[in-house]
Structure formats: C-alpha cells, structure tokens
Length: 221
Ligand code: B12
Image (tube, rainbow, N blue to C red):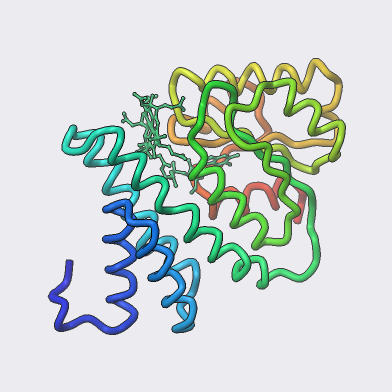
C-alpha cells in the first residue's frame, strides 16, 4: 500500500474500504463506501478498485492457508451492506427497462457474491433482475421461468462439485419445454466457455462487466 502521506482523500477512502473488507469490518466498510459516494466517487471505482481486490486478497490468503474459513466468511459478510449502498447509484444511470433477467446459484452452492455483483451491474444496465438466491433446485428455475417469462436466465456455480448442477438445471429447463423464449447464460469461478458449449448454454461470461455485454448481445441489444 502507498505511503499514507502521499494519499489523496480518494486514495484514503479506497485504502480504508480495502482494509475494512480484508479485515471483515462491515461497519467501517459501510462508512467508507458512504464517504466515497458522498465525495462523488464513481461507485464502480469503489467496487473494482477496493472491494473486489480485497476479496481477491482474502481468497488468496485462504487458498495459501494463511487464513481459515471463519475469517473468509467474516470478510465475505463485510461486502453485501456496501453493495446495497452502491446499488441505487448504479440503477440511477439507466432509464428504460431493457429486459427481465432471472438469476440463481445452483443447488448445493451458497456462493452469492459474484452472482450479486452481476445482478447489480445488470440492474444498472436497465434489466429487471429477479434473484432466486442460493442453493436453488432446478425445479425452482423452471417455476421462475413460468412465472416471470424472463428474456435471460443466469445460472451461477462456484464449486467444481456443484458445476454439474448447471447442466442438470439446463436439462430441466429444456425438458420442461420453457426454453424457447429464454436464453441461458452461465458463470462462476470454475465455469468456462468450453463447459458452456459442452452443456448447451447460450452464453458464458467470466465477470459482471462481460455478463452485461453478453446478455445484451444475446438479445441483440
Ligand atoms: C467468499 C468465498 C466463500 C464464502 C462465500 C460467501 C458468499 N456469500 O458468497 C464462504 C465462506 C461461505 C465459502 C464457503 C465455501 N467455499 Co468458498 N470461496 C470463496 C472465495 C474466497 C471467493 C468467491 C467470491 O465470492 N469471489 C468474488 C467474486 C466477485 O468472484 P468472481 O468469480 O470474480 O465472480 C465473477 C464471476 O464468477 C462471474 N459470475 C459469477 N456468477 C455468475 C453467473 C452468471 C450467469 C454469469 C454470466 C457470471 C457470473 O461474475 C462475477 C462478478 O464479476 C473463493 C475463492 C476464489 N478465488 O474464487 C472460494 C472457493 C470458491 N470456495 C471453495 C470452497 C471449497 C468452499 C467450501 C466447500 C469450504 C468448506 N470447506 O466448507 C464452502 C462451500 C459452501 C457451499 N456449499 O457453497 C473453493 C472451491 C474449490 C473448488 N474447486 O470447488 C474456492 C475456489 C476456494 C479454494 N481454492 O479452496 N466460500
């Protein structure tokens, strides 16, 4: 981290947000996010230059065994409140509703930070997002398609052990005969374009920014 004496107010907000998420300090994370927004900072800068790098660092420490699951969980919990503060600022940027998007994390999987980030970006791009949450059985995706008639369905998986559920979910949607008016896009840490092609998804995106781009291109927007 840079010498604090050289810090601009913006740098110090980013530093304190990064440190708060890394330490799992939700109160300071919210406080720094609020200060950043009040100082007129771009909400995406707060997200991509502080919160995500902090979580990546925590993920790295977990993978190298320098921290354990409880610390990881505490850090992961520091993010949602800050993301809630950012959400309305992104949504403000859009005017017309461009489509309906149903999103969920597959059965057996409770990772939702990446999914939620996609949701925030899609809302910001003008989509109505219906979030089914985590640990969503294939049948619930089918029910949501029947109820909401989405233009696109997003399926998220973060574990190699839950990745096969993505295929199970796509098969259930196809077998229920509700796929004709709906495109399916998939994502999550272990998911790849190759896997998407293999299981018959219409699209894949490695991150929230390209998710918006891919969803729009699937719809010809
Ligand atoms: C945070 C975290 C957790 C948190 C989750 C909190 C939450 N609310 O999400 C907690 C602590 C609960 C957790 C639990 C577990 N975790 Co975990 N976790 C992580 C960690 C560190 C970060 C994941 C994350 O949120 N990253 C931040 C987001 C922003 O990541 P992202 O991938 O960049 O997201 C983008 C894309 O994936 C994409 N995307 C995501 N979803 C979608 C959907 C669509 C449609 C599209 C288009 C795109 C898209 O867009 C996102 C935004 O840009 C990863 C490590 C890692 N490096 O990924 C491990 C990791 C995923 N976890 C792992 C494991 C093993 C577990 C546990 C089994 C641990 C345990 N022993 O209990 C449990 C499983 C619980 C369960 N049943 O799901 C492993 C998985 C290994 C594997 N190969 O399967 C990882 C890789 C860590 C590791 N190396 O060991 N975990």
